[in-house]
Amino acid sequence: MLRPKVLIVDDERLLRWSLQQNLAREGYAVFTAETGSEALELFREELPDITLLDIHLPDISGIKVLQYIKEFDKDAIVLMITAYGDIQTAVECIKLGAYDFIEKPFNMEKLNLIIRKALETSSLRREVSQLKENLSQQYGFDSIIGSSPPMKQLFEMIKKIALSDATTILIQGESGTGKDLVARVIHYQSKRASKPFLEINCTALPETLIESELFGYEKGAFTDAKTMKRGLFEMADGGSIFLDEIGDMKLHTQAKLLKVIETKTFKRIGGVKDISVDVRVIAATNKDLKEETKRGNFREDLYFRLKVIPLYLPPLRERGRDVLLLAKYFIDQYNREFRKNVKGLSPETERLFLEYHWPGNVRELKNIIERVMILENTEYIRPEHLPREFFKGESVSESRSVLFDFDLPPGGIDIEEVEKSLIKKALEKAKGNQSKAARLLNLSRDAFRYRMMKYGLLEKNSNVV
Image 1 (cartoon, one colour):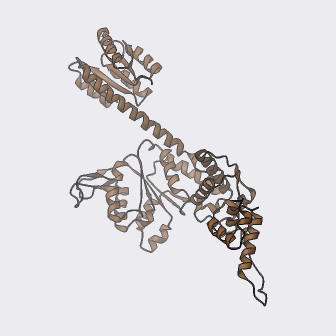
Image 2: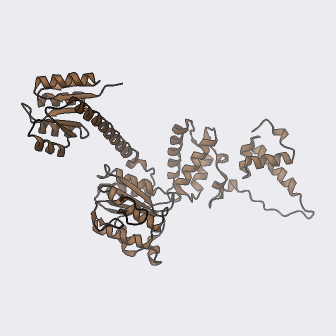
Image 3: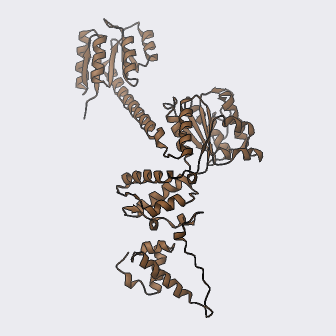
C-alpha cells in the first residue's frame, strides 16, 4: 500500500527536520523544501497528499505558492504554517483555498490529528472529483444514440442548450423516449456540471409532500416538523433540478414553482425569510401541456415560462433505423454485464424490429434485449426469442399472425384434433425444442408441455427441452 505523501515547505532547517522525523515515524513519505520555487517543483513532481506551507518564505510568499498550487490542483490539501500575529493572513489563505492553518509553536499530537483529518478530506474530494468526471463521461453527448434526421436536429439543440445560460427547459415526449437521459446530458455537459443535479417525480408524491421536498420547511411548520429541512431548490443551488412528469403537478404547487422561476426566491414552508437560488429548471412531461392548459389542469403562465426552450423527443417508431443502432448498443452493454457474446439480431428480427410500433419506446426495446439475453444462450437474437407481448403490438408481423380463412366442414371438426395438430406442427418447426415451440403458439413452456402430455406427445420428445 502506498504511503501518503507530505510536503513540508519552511525556511527553518530545524523545523523541517523535526517535522520530517515526526511524520516519517507516523508512516508518511515526507519531502521538504526551503523555498517557494523548490516547493512548486517538488509539488509538480510528487503530487503530495498534504502540503505544510509556511506563509513567510525567502523567495516567494506562501500566499503566492498557495495560489500556484491551487491553480495546478484545485483539490490539493494545503495547511498553512503561521507565526504569532499572522492569523489575519492565515484567514485570507483559507479564503484562497487553504484547508486550515497551524500556529507556531505547534503541538505535534494536534498536528498529526489535523493531518489525518485532512487526508480523509483529500480522499473524499478526489472520490467526488472522480465521480463527477465519470458522470460527465457517462452523460456525454454521445450517450444519446441515433442518426435519424429528427435525432440529428435534437443533438444540435441539446448542445446549444447545454452551453447556454437558459434557466428553464421543457422536454416533451412519450414515456420511454429518454427524457431523463436528455436532462442529465444537458446538466453534465453544462457549466453547472460540478453542482448538484437533483430530480423529483411529480406523480410519485402527494401535493403536500412535493412542496416540502421542493422548498423545505422550518422547524415546527407542522406537527412532524421536528427539525428544519432544506428543499431540493436550496440544495440544487448553482446546479439543476429535474421535474419529471410536471404535467401531473397540482395547480397550487404550480403557482409556487412559477414564483421561484420568475423571482429566483422562495420561502421554506412555515418560513418568513426569502431564500435566493440560482437553479436551472428542466421539466419533462409525456402530456400535451397546451391541451392541459385548455382543460384547466395546467397554468398557462407556467407553461409559457417553461417552454422558453422546448425540446421534443420523437417516439422510437419515428426514428427509422435508430432502433437497430439502439439494439446493438444494448446488446453490447449486456454482453459486458452478463459476460455473453451475442453478435446481434438475425435478419428476420431486424425486420420485425423495424416494423414494430414500439409503444414503450426505447425503454421497451432495452427491456426486451435484457430479457432475451438473460434467458437465452444464443449467437443471434431470433424471432422465437422475443416475448409474446412483443407480437401483440400494432404492427405484428404477418409471419407471426397465422390467419385461418376456411369454412367448417358440414360434419363439424374435433377441436382437440386441431390443437394436437398445431402442437405437432410447432414441434416440427422448432425441431423438437419445446421452449421455442411454445413461443410459436404464444404459450408458456408449462402450458405447452401439459398439452403434449395430454396428447401423448411428451414421450416422443423427452430428450428435447
